[in-house]
Image (cartoon, rainbow, N blue to C red):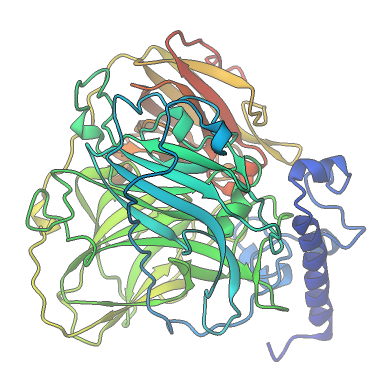
Length: 612
Ligand SMILES: [Cu+2]
């Protein structure tokens, strides 16, 4: 920073001032729609620059595609005028492992089928399956503020937590064991700069009845609570595969996160996310049984990745509402800590990698100290276990909300070896990655693995022996084909030209039927699209058979520039409302999402393929 010219210093000041002004708007809890109404946004969706809101507009620059990253300093670390975060020393703190959620003996008042509004419950619809799939475990979770450290060289942060930690407590669930979570909103009156004290908690990838799904418009306020019933059943249990469901629909790495309409990005950025792991008789959590995957919790480690910005003035987490394209941070967090280290023994580990957002795409490599790649095995994507492990020496890409379970074997390393988990995917702004792969050592180092000398046994399966996990579920003829274009209109984000509206049922799916959807991406933007309730199979990507990693089941589909993807679904067992949305949480809030309902009639809306 020694050779920065005076002009650059002035520019840096402008960026900081503009960011400060924007933060005041954010602290006022104005949504994008409020800003539009107040005339503070241009028709293209940028904040007006007259009042010193948009550093980007003043400069006239802005990150846009490859080559622009060289100019990143001009636009701030995250592009779009975000100030550069203060420096922090990497790899000084151990990886934080979120605690396992503990049950309570009972809940008082006892859960009821109908919403217990008299006692403060915010649910609006009765439970569909509380009596047929009665919960055998009960949890009580309080969403509350906690002062937490993201790095020892930064002040404590006022984060929003589930029971006190970021990520929140990890649920360890089993198929055949329904649970009920009583979720309290105990968030404080002062939001500390950003975040809305109104929440809806979604269990991402759950085959969950609608009223417990965490639909974005099922939000609830401070002092209220909401009972969420997670049946932990395999899809098809009450339809195609009675009574236990289709084993080939088994899931393993789920996560939960806030999904409050219009405010998801802020609330998740503030900390409201955690893991939910599902085990069964095959994926047992014990490496001597079933598929013999590395034992939980010692050798089976969930890792949530986030990139965030820190205000250089006060060292506190900064959220930039104006950054409508998507927020890129210049600080990289694993399980809530900036660049931690993790000591590993000389054996195999299962890592459950989750891109927690808000907007960045990653491509992860394991970089050895001689700058060569350590190969690893991908055993699961977000649709969970693949048919067979897939080895990679060229990394693995993870879009927001995607998960990749990998097996890494450290047995060939000498004690004292250092390996870095490195993101080498170049991305200059929220629009999406450039798809340039940076050279080893030139990317973002997320985490440092330190190999320790302890002797250790390893009873886990060797992926090189090509074990078989689940088959891709068999298909039935689809009832209908629907088509969706994901695009940008007037600075907002639309699906088939429309913004999200809680009450607008865009189409109805007939329960227990199959559908094929065609999803089409727009020019110059990447969108990780998530559809709630049932996993899909990717039939075709741009007319081609998808890769081995994408071929099985998925719950997030990556739509790159002008991509055309065909996916297949069944919608079984439960009814109600669900969303499809972009999981770049900034796009989602502004308002690339739609509502569809599952009922026993269905309709044929949005089937006008090729005529948008
Ligand atoms: Cu998007």
